[in-house]
Image 1 (cartoon, rainbow, N blue to C red):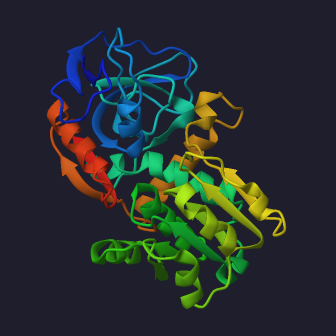
Image 2: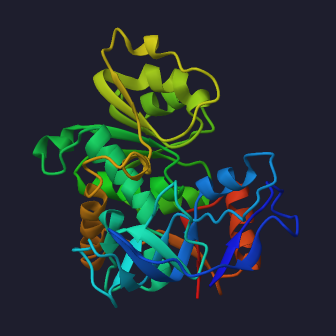
Length: 337
């Protein structure tokens, strides 16, 4: 099969930053599905992994953490899927990624693909949906059926990015008053389309921005960008007993003592955690993706695809990486066949 990977951690403009090569099609065993891939999306994590490191690798590393495709083989322990079914998933951090013709993936982190969307629209959704769902409903412990959510406010920092674009929709669906940050005309329009009730400009002082909107504190904060830069504002804005979750790696220690008097909670969200540690609740990612597929088919939420490139090859993957590296990407970029 054809695959795309890298041997060296090079700038994306370099000819060898991503290379095409051939390798044997893997065999499905245990809980594995062998999926023939039709579309993939590129996330900031792809760029981070491609750039981070100094050693030249012996074998090309294949990355990619979003895919839609068709099941062609199943392992002996598979019970959730059959050959021929269309699926979508974000995969695992400790296995070869989706930038290849075929990929092995554990059925417990896979969902049946939505029926009413194009492959590109579907491929935009798995990683960001899982991240947003786990952050909001598991780490912030928000119950989407709780009628009291209408009295509660969530601040989503970086509302127009990949995760923010679906987190805004899910928080809106759960009944929360959603304040999303955006600073440009096009990003403001995008977050409003996704259900944001109010906008705060993250290029200005967020404390002043939230106070100007009429709130002293917010009940929940979802940090999707620059935790270091926003920590002072986050600790000031969180309500006593409030909850904060972040997906961004900090580059210096954050001062949790700032939350002591407020008795506020801070949690990390890492979408790969369940498959990385093979946790007993790993199958919840299957359940989440099944729910996301239903919500997409019922138009409760919509795909966050904003840019599609075709076909899947090294040149188009490089273009997708370059788009992510601008840090101005709205929604998601997908490469499809």
